[in-house]
Length: 262
Image: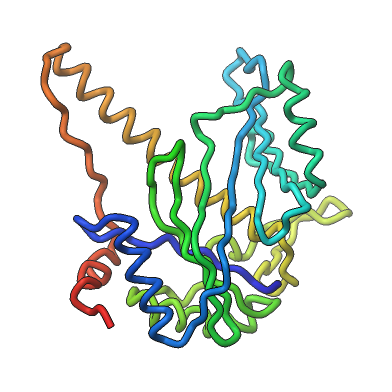
């Protein structure tokens, strides 16, 4: 196990997820990588019931599984105020959540997963994940794994991502590893450089939750916009065209992938 970095892949206009996964798989194999099985990371969210009536956000428990750790269940408890607590348990934790229906209810419509092929290339492990929510395709997540401390290998990971994906990756550490303000045991605040920490499996799970949350927010935003448009139409029997969000700045680089097939 080593440091894992997640990189959302900018989807070129007019290309399907299956087409991009096939292209990236062939590109990895042409570089000398070897196929090393499959992987799966999934997330189900449970929200507290009943919800608070004073406007404060309710608590949520995010339950995640990672096929790299088949005997473990990861959970992240979200207080609703920005504070999170991580927990690692065995698979019986899933049964426990099913017994707590009076306290927490599953939001099954937001169950999300990243699934795909796993490759090995030198010192790197690369996973090409197709993200789906309720069996609907949402995007592609690239997971790349290397050494144990990000500060020692970020430049290698960055160069690998740029060369393999043909996109620009900034020099700064990914947001998850940014310097954070933490509270010491003495109740004092101090700056903490997370990129110097020894990496743990929970770090991978937290990154996946961060990316899954972004996909969920995108779906929620899309639904809100579409709902507003349909309301303005006054119930007219008219087919609404999908609302497209502004493309990422790196879309231009990715758009030419179809012409650069090795």
